[in-house]
Length: 441
Image (cartoon, rainbow, N blue to C red):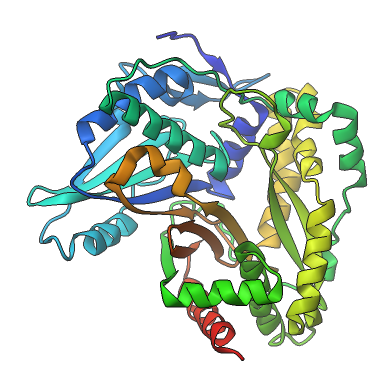
């Protein structure tokens, strides 16, 4: 293995720098596996994946011009896996107790100054053949969909070894210039210039600022809402009736909550602002992997009164979707990249960092990772279920992350420093609105 340092991309540095005391973007892909899952083959597959993606054997070190990924001393791919025993369980109770055990773990987050950007926590009990496998990944390595592709690569290597196929090395596209040049630099710059600047003054805070730069190790609260079976079928029927996708429906429901919380203010906001993610990978042609931060965002101001008319919301969201681009948002990181990384970090912390903290007070952010079926398909019938959690910021309202697998939709509500127990409140309020929607005539 090549032990030379690897130059970090601008977004590697940006997302880790934001992580230190603002956004804490760690992702947890919680996977239920049955007795057909082979842990030894998983270990072998990781050896191959580290060859394909050497960054997975490295930690992130600050630099002046650019940060770098340096080899971890005496690294072995097996150290990516952390085995955790769950006591006092049987076959019936295992998954629930293993999940609860994971949620309460204090060391599940990644520290890229000390460890690689992938950690796999395997929760087990010797008397039970099933396991809970949690892929913990970091935003500095890739966006949520990029990390889905990482899991797919692990699964493909697993399938190759299981079926004794010859393994061929693969190339990964993981730099921002690759994306910008594929899209067209001048076109991307034009999109950046024309991206509407959203004034924060339009939106009133829904809560007081609870950010504390000296308390970055506060507890991470995670709760989940599962919609499956007949309930999910009813929700899908409502989506079809309203002309919405599941993603659009989740945005609509979150806006109803924002409207509800605004009504408690002495001077309510007339609008809310949706942050809508766009996967930009399709702009890059070629057969190589695209495990990187290739997600953009556009911002969509919505009149809160429009949430009283779901059909109008559906039409306007479709019009917005038809014209959204998303490249403009990543240019804010690309354009300053001619400066030393130490200077760029000061820019991020003084502008992007402040904006992140302030926005979390004003709106509910939803992140839809989408259906996960295709990414774990190479594992075969060993996977019973998978869902994805996006860790939230250190302040403000909880974040809602959404993912689907087979006929299940899972929403996780997450927040750090949840002294006011907002995670429980958001979950209960969201569940109530879902029930009202699917039972409406």
